[in-house]
Image (cartoon, rainbow, N blue to C red; front, side, top):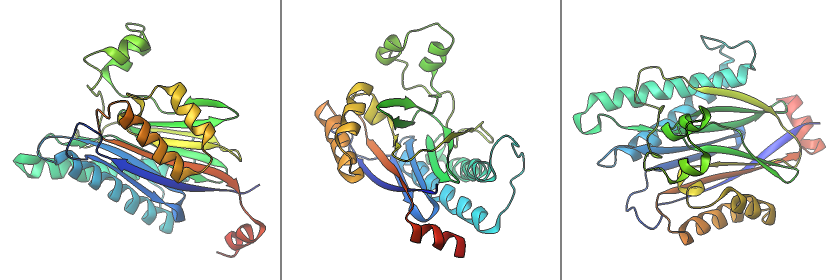
Length: 265
């Protein structure tokens, strides 16, 4: 059975911050969605996240067109996941070089979480503490791992998840795009199923809105665009302490006509 994914996205500065340093991109022709949460003063975070999503999409699209096999190829993963990871690594180089080229941009960086659907698999590249969730059969699962100091402590048993959520250290990242020459990028794949819902989001969503509430909203709203609006609205009702950005996607079965069209490409 061939699957397709449709996306919607929404970004909002929230109730506290004037600038929106988040960015999102959807490219349905590539079955690709990306969320990035920038950091750095003087609007540098906005520059970093904008560069990151645009370069990732551009490089990934180029590799998909040429069929290029990236260096440092992971044989356990598909060509497409390797291409997505290399595209993110190339975006890192662009952000890193831009940050070092100008004193007022030095130290800028961004999170980046990207998901694409290919051949029945969800292909993911991720760095930072934005998140990708999967809602399947009533269960909400976080597919990505937060690259933050507090979650590092949680994974090592030094802190509970509840303590991490209240810690003053929760905004310290252990990995981000643009802050070093070649940061490790998490790459993973999950089997895709008809009816799956995916959610990519910046921390401006999941910090003010508990996961149980996110799950409840996702289950209650089948339309991706309305889901994005409801999630952003809920984050702002709960104080809107940060920029909030969401990309929502739904996996559906391709029609016979769409499947035939793929074969003719």
